Image (cartoon, rainbow, N blue to C red; front, side, top):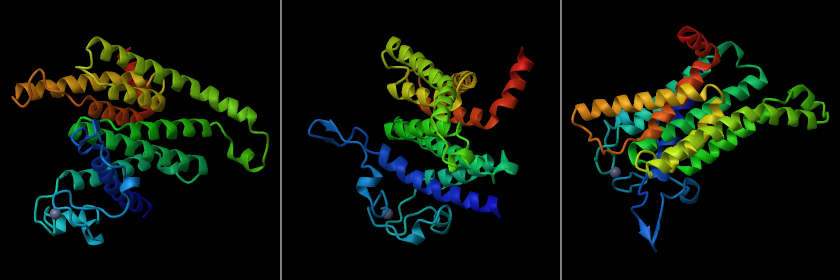
Length: 290
Ligand SMILES: [Zn+2]
């Protein structure tokens, strides 16, 4: 029952992520007003209801039920009959499934307070990664807003994880725990700085043709989330899978050597993979190789 609820919750979050992806990524650089490229309106500024991106008709609640609306409407807008992108149900389903997987991976420990905070944090980071995955794939954009949210969330989570909630309630002096939290944070911050510096060097050498600044910012978030040494296999797998998919697309005639590759998509996917596999399995593999 709990897992069913988490899956449904994931579907709803996925529906919100679709809106975020659209509003943060669409018409990036296309609407040039007064010489400044206007990004998609922020969800907060736009507020209110969702509209069909094709005909602009306001959508009613029965058009917004995750997955179900898409199936019932047979993938077409109720008002203009134009096709609704497959992105919508796919992102909703994927978010639901990823939430389910994350909550199952530590199933017997969900109910203690600190572990439910961990689960919420994992769901939050998974949501950020989903938005980055789709935005880079679709618009070649890694939204700064998502990176900033992810960095702040991770910083707070790592800091909080040093706190003992029992002593928090009894109102003890929190200073030693704050110091402890910052100490715990240090290796994560270091791997964040090193990972993003590595990407900055690549961006400078290739003059932004291979990678963009967005990739360097994403690498910072990856380093902060994964820490050392987990950042290494995540980056390695991203390069390998990116090159592999690029090669397959070139061989299939769907891409050219010069085609832009949405590298953030590969970074995001492999960050999730390593986050899920966690320490134990990783160490087992490293031992196997060595
Ligand atoms: Zn429509």
